[in-house]
Image (cartoon, rainbow, N blue to C red; front, side, top):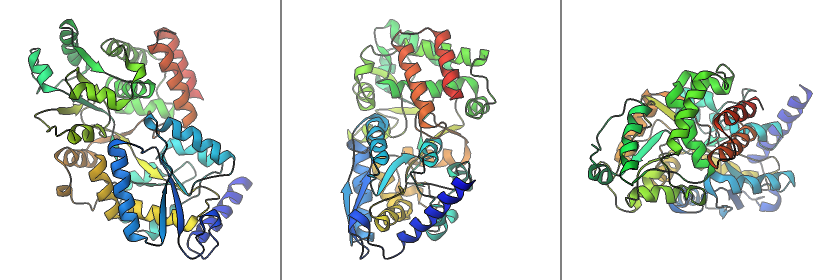
Length: 422
């Protein structure tokens, strides 16, 4: 309790500094300006396009501040997170950094490395425009909120090349009731010498794993994996892992040397029929002038229809941020209507705000806005919403061992159970 009280006091002082006339540390922001280092893993493609759009709004809203790009490339942020942790431990934080909203933040909270920004939700009017259940998901165990989301992504999606399907006698409009029905068509593709399902390096395999767990277990039991009410060593998890093992047998053999854009490109180019990836993939299709329902189709992972596997990119204020005024200004832009519209139109995600006009977004994004409003919401494992970083890292290690043949299914299940126990 004493530690929590001390941290709360430190946070209050820091946020007071955000609105005050402090010297701004290394950011030279004493006059309400200066450099603002924004640390992300948005270094290429639609992610970089989204960041650029957000930076444009930030510059319009805050002409006295200068954006400094601290982006570090690497799939799902793995390289960025490693470098960030080194900097935080050395007490050399950026002014603000990207993190997935949800359980991923817990390690930073436990280490007293990020500030409580709950008060900014009232100051910026976010509690009036963010869905109440989203705000609840953003709260930490202590009831505080430590980040502001820039967007909402959906993870449980299959992207398909309809020409490849038609050429192999498969109706591209087929609505698969479950994984078994889908795998029947994957068998046809495999027999024809087509790569049925593209995947890439370990994090994309964990992404596939989470969607299989969701489809096989259902949303309640899937959520139970993270709150302890579902037994990781139970028979229903064994069945789900058997499904995952079979799906991996349909994938490309060069998977461990690829990242998600290359796996998605296999579908775009007709080198594979299907790919399981979040809805950031839509921008990869659209950048190459591919039209939804003509050049590509998308549908929930079979067995997960009516469920929205949620993740959100968000921004924090690190303890000791050199320019806390600049960090606060960046977070205000991130949460603003203008910022969220500009960013999400470029990135392919949807706004966290409910007052954005769906007509401003693409056909896919409009369906995602509807789904987020009506579907059952669950939290993504691979993208930080469901489990702390240490748990995800342990699950990733176990998955890599399994998919490279270094462990069998029984050992894989035991290692996943141990990882979830922490």
